[in-house]
Length: 225
Image 1: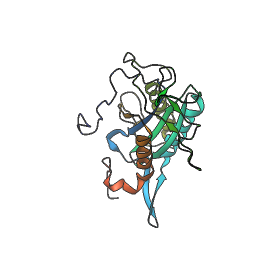
Image 2 (image 1 turned 135 degrees about the horizontal axis):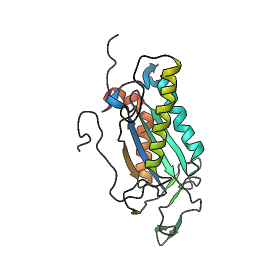
Image 3 (image 1 turned 60 degrees about the vertical axis):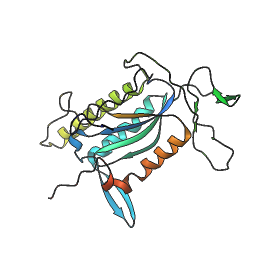
């Protein structure tokens, strides 16, 4: 699989004609420019790897969760900030009606069937979101309001602004970020989660990412002091 057009830039993974404002679960990955490890450090506490956020990582974390406070159609699920990238599962859900099963097929008009508050089965203690297999909802390939691309654009812009404020406040001798000097790579990776199996696998991958840092495809060793 060709994931890169060149050394650092992620090739576009947008699904042609998919409506990225559709109700669904999305697995998102954003990578810092040049894979610079300026978000966090991975430290070992006993036999457990833990994430220690750096100043820029703290800003990214704050802006990530603030995004969901101001966008009521979005919900953040599993999320982790790594030294030079972040992973998150983001849900778009405007419809709170429960999934309806008719003749073993899920239906709720023609919209994807996604209902976070409901348990997926009757097992006691199982609070995983209800992720049913979803159909493709097609739309012209443009940035739609209240879509994943609009969310990412707003989030990146907020991160640039807050980090620039931090640079000014602490008189740091580093370039500020703008449209020509991005903090995150201009593109990002997304995957539309189609069923519960995918959701569980991706959620576990995110949770275990710090333990797998040295094996990560984005791994970059810390330069000697």
